[in-house]
Length: 244
Image (cartoon, rainbow, N blue to C red; front, side):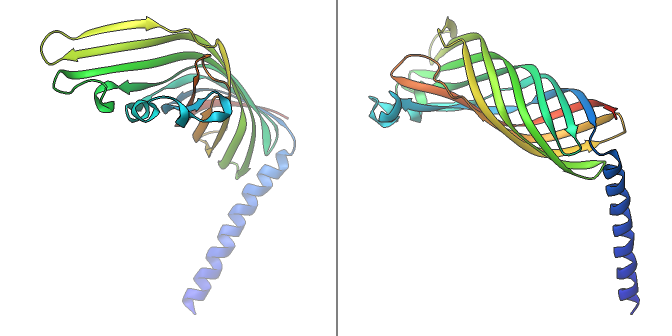
């Protein structure tokens, strides 16, 4: 009997707390909330391969050897974000930032270079972009903790493209050679994200959002077409200004 009474009281308490929170959210109704913040997105970047469009990468000579030596890289993304919440549960987000994309071709791992002759022999393909994302966002939950999801498109403007060759022979000195690459100056990448938005105070909040993006266009005119993708968890600290 006591357990039933305690359980009933607990349900009433939770219902009351949720009702108060929902009332507060509902009272705001349609409004304009401007969230301005900084983002740090530690990501993993790699590449996908196609060969002359619809033919498939498996038709490219020695593709199995090439793929066996390729590994992804750590690719941080930093920048500014502005979210315009045009209604309590939806809005748009845009911003500006810097990102790195690329991968490493390990010649020893692929068998192209002998492990008896070299301690290290690899090529880092590194692309650096200025990014301008535009996303449609939706959110749901209480006034303090909300689930948030977004889908959109990232415009990527190439700043620099390099191939960095690092050779460490078993006997002799290590040398590093940086070679510039010619790549398409602009690319587009669809992106999706979903995570948690926490209002620490009425003016300050934090967001944690796992995210993914993949380039639409190839990076050069070579028969073996390379597109970069990245997956990470973005961490955003933002200030909120509400205008009713």
